[in-house]
Amino acid sequence: MKLETLERDTLHAPRPEAPVTTILLVEDEPVTRVSMAARLTRLGYRVLEAENGRVGLDVARRERPDLLIVDWMMPEMDGPTFCEAVRRDPLLKSSQILLMTAHDKPAQIAEGLVRGADDFLSKSASKQEITARVLAGLRTSRLVRVLETTGDELKSSMLQLQNKQAETEADLQTAARFVQSLLPPQGSPVHGIALAWEYQPSLALGGDLFGVMAIDEDHLGLYILDASGHGVAAALRSASLMTFLRGENILQLLGSYDPEKVLSEANRRFPLSADGEYFTLWVGQLHLPTGSLTYASAGHPGALISSVQSSSRWLTRSSFPLGFDPSAQFTNDRLSLKPADRLFLLSDGIYEVPSPDGELWGRERFQGMIDAGKQTSLSATIASCFSAARGWQQAQHFPDDAAVVGIELTGGPDGTLNG
Amino acid sequence: MDKTMDKTAVLDLPEALSRADGDQDLLLTLAGLFLQESPKEAAAARAALGRQDRAGLAAAAHKLKGSVMTICAPRLFESAKRLEELGRRGEFAEASPVYADVETHLAEVHAALRELIARGFPV
Image (tube, rainbow over all chains, first blue to last red; front, side):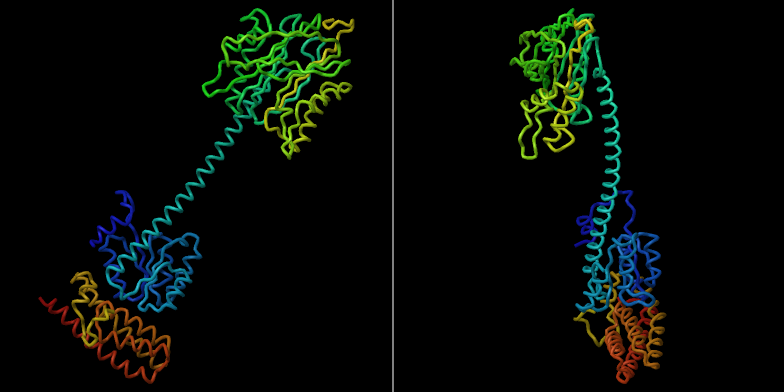
């Protein structure tokens, strides 16, 4: 076989700009060294020569040759000692070494391998065998170098990824702060009404959002929405629906914050997304002078009324989520609130939390917490719900967005709501 | 060394040329180098023998043997190899006559190489 053919077929074709393959030959006996160097040069390699192991190590460190061919018996530093020195050297330790010997006794071969040689080259070997062993050594050397380069590239990619992730994390935190800034301030949005809420998104950015705002002198608008899906996409869609639900926008579009009209309009404007994502939405309007609450829901299960005199009850009516049916009609329900009554809007993430055994905390237990909290402050009641849910799942973070919004009619000094 | 090679030949020129990949100039260079280097190894071997230095004798004979392998001188190779073994074993009494053989065979090889350098390769 022609050597050129062997090399081309066996090794990767070198790129034109690729450096010449370099072989370091360490041999004290000049006749053998010159003969071997001439042969390797004829094969197209750049050959470096050293007359003993000590000089060989210096040349190897300086030139990082692709292959080291080292004589066994040498003064100063013999072949096996040279191999050991290479393996201890951080810069050279992955070098390929052919140990050259005039004899090939199994015990010596074993000793050479143990002390760091990769292969043996008998001085009496045929030209074909020498060529084949050199090629095999170079092939391994290239693979080792590719591996080392790949390892370095992996490390640097990992660093880049970590930096990228830190940037993304920072972006998410910024976006989360923005979304939080859209949520209503705690306290008293209008006279006679107390507002408290707690919100814990499952990720930095939540998809469950809510609003409580004065529409005009007599009306308070309320909503809670839940976007299907999680993460940034859900949060963006939620923020867009939230923008639509702003009081000024709805008044301009519809003339009032009538819940069934708001839902119909939202249903028209927020169809199912291309990948099947949708919203559920509960909208209410409280007439402040009378305490009359008008509300409607598009598939959202989360409103609970709690009165001083009676047990709490859910304000539910089965309906489609937004976007399922463009012609869907939503119907208002009405309810009269009295002073000290509490209205809770909540996302199902607060009660759909599993215990370590897999049992859900559930709506009934949540409702029980609300009933038990009648004598405590609104914010304390909500806090106890979160604390009970966390205790149930024995974890601090919720698997889904968890939100509880509480409204309490505090009443005016003259007993009217809008006193 | 090639087992089929005639162990009694002074110089196996075809084999030496083949080991030099057919490069006559290279072989002449190697011959010149051998003429220059081999007396040093022979002298080192003699000195080691004189002071009964096992390692020194084995190392010198080994080094000589390596260069002899390259220029393909079968008789000298056999005696150098024997000298290396005796040196390794410290059998100095037996090593003395073998060293004499090495000197004789080395002189033969030198003569053959000088002739090669002077007259060139036989056509």
